[in-house]
Image 1 (tube, rainbow, N blue to C red):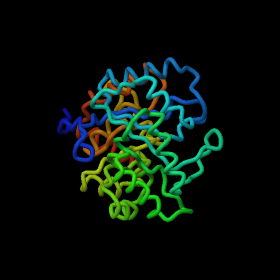
Image 2: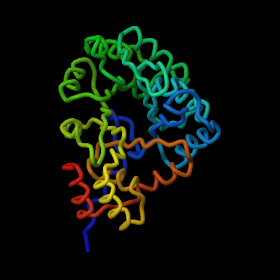
Image 3: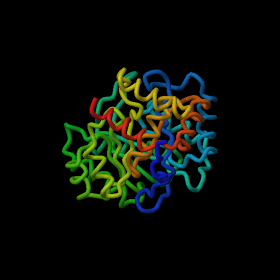
Image 4: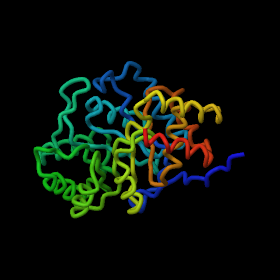
Length: 287
């Protein structure tokens, strides 16, 4: 009989102060098609946000560009007054010109405008985690970092994170502020940012994978189905569980606009993968 892995840590201390349940919620999907405009069922999205908190979620990830603005507005509508332990992370640095269109703008002018807008929409005096959505190839990264540094000094931001960045980018940013989180695309079958995961783990920086369910290649899905069958789980639950087991600094933010799907995602924390399961799933990184 396969032995189980050591019980994974269910919490992570973000920025040395916030105790975060590692299974959080990503609020991108409470918008319209193409992450554009309002959702088809606003009432269900409000229920999702409330239910997430009831189920123990105390980290919600969003961005001003989701909608745009829709996700932040719904979070405030559903959850103000916020629970004392709830950490909301939002992002700035992208524009929206239409469904599925995401031009980058991390200029100082835009970042300042984006931050002020997020504070107003979320009804906050200070954002606990503000993340640079993208480094802008048209703007020296140092200019963007200086804006975030000043906002932190002014008390508008508690902690600062980055998205889609290399180790080199993280090291440059650390000359301006403490980087407490990195949000890169990563999944059981997409390990492009493995070096960044290793760096963040070594430095106690949260690693927040987006698109955590992977690319859905056929061989990978077959492997996930086999492991899922052993646990009476879905392949999505196994893909998420692998991430929880894989590294203790990973914070998960699966997104959904359905209460039923949310509850299914949250059951992931109860899955205990065996060492054999992990070996099999780790092999997907070589596909």
